[in-house]
Image 1 (cartoon, helix red, strand yellow):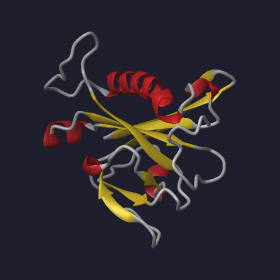
Image 2 (cartoon, one colour):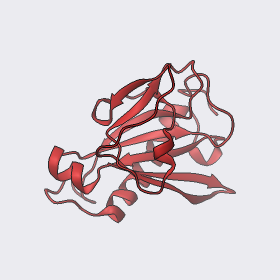
Image 3 (cartoon, helix red, strand yellow):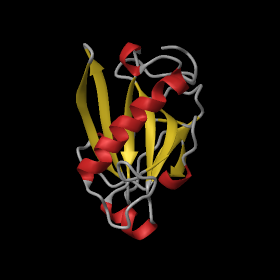
Image 4 (cartoon, helix red, strand yellow):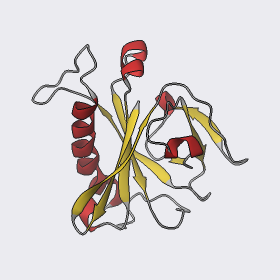
Length: 164
C-alpha cells in the first residue's frame, strides 16, 4: 500500500508524505496494538510509526491506540480503487499517479461526512494509504485507507462529527 498526505494551506492542497505498505516492523509505544493494514476499520486511531515518516516505507502493520490516547491519525474511509468512469478495478497495478489521483478525490469527498465540515474549512488534514505494486499483485489489495491527521497537537479523542 502507498500513503499520500495532503494538507490544506490557504485553500491550496500541499503535498505530504508518500508511504507504502508491504512488510516492515514498526516500533510501538506500550499502549499500542499492532494491526494489519488489511484489518484497519473506520474510526480506528493510530500513532504514526517513525518508519512512516520516511518518503517510501513498506508497512504491514500500524500502531492502533484507543482514541482517548494521544494519537496523530484516525481512519475515516476505506475506498476500493476503480478505474475512472467505471465501477471495476483493473487486474494490473494502475500506477502510483492513478492511485494518488483516486485517493485525493475520494478522501476529500469522504472527509465532511466523517468530520462534519469540508476539509477546506477544517483545522484538520487528510492523508491516505494506497496499495503498493506488491500488495496489489500479491494480496489483491485494492483498498485506499483515508486518515484524518493534524500537524499540531496530538488528538485525544475521535474527530467524528466534531466540525473541526
